[in-house]
Image (tube, helix red, strand yellow):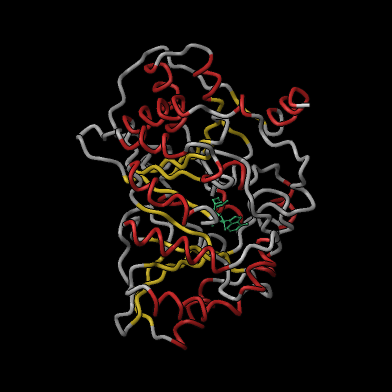
Length: 374
Ligand code: SAM
């Protein structure tokens, strides 16, 4: 059975074999792509499996029990991930985010975190090492993750109303357990904690103000709530523009309840526009991936569960770094290949989406979010 699954999973998306340059020069830490964007963040998907079946990401009808998830032998091992991460750090990456699927489902993840937390930038700085999770296992694992060297977590939570949340995760998982995970993460010092809420018009937009109220009132401004526009990632989630509630509308609703004022960005390439409550009760973030494309300063690369490098969340093809790892390439050769790939990058899907006709965008074969990581 497992043997039959291997080719299905491996052939699901097209992959190119990276080119190794003839002249190998050591990474300078100053890579820049065709649009002048540096390489700063690496998101690493550690599993393509998830215990939620959110309809906007892994709808139950498609991601059934016998869906062809990747077999264990296809996944990058912790040693392979760490080896690649070291190469990316030499090229200028300062931030690593573990994602999935649900990353806490990957067995012994603390071990990987321990290995990654030992990495240093070329000028000797530790990395910003973080993880995105649905928090189902967070209350149990927060302490071990912290002890292993994880700096902070981002938790996904789409509603406070238990019935709405259970409907959205589609596995009947209760809100209370996610809140317990957030509480434990805070207790062990995995902060500042960010909470991401994907807003889908007509599904959970009535939860915007209650979510804002809850996170203002319960965490002394230590938890930053961020609202994400429902995106047209992958091809399984039945995306329609009508389901997108623009961030401007999210801001208007919150501002009417709790007046807001804009904040300066923390860093270049930051996905969220920052706003703070005028009464000093903390800040929120708005991620307008659909209505206000932010490709112009996108400095993120994504490594899929089985080692393909993607240069855009909306990419249709990855570069097979695992083939280099398992084919005996040296670190210098892999670094050379990664450098070339980044230098040739010109992806800016979200900016182009605006100019596409509706059917052009949805017809492209794009990787799924659970596979590439959010
Ligand atoms: N399982 C982890 C989690 O729940 O955070 C990590 C992976 S999940 C794919 C990462 C993030 O992507 C989550 O916050 C999820 O809500 C978000 N996401 C998935 N599909 C999305 C979509 N179509 N539009 C916007 N955000 C989406």
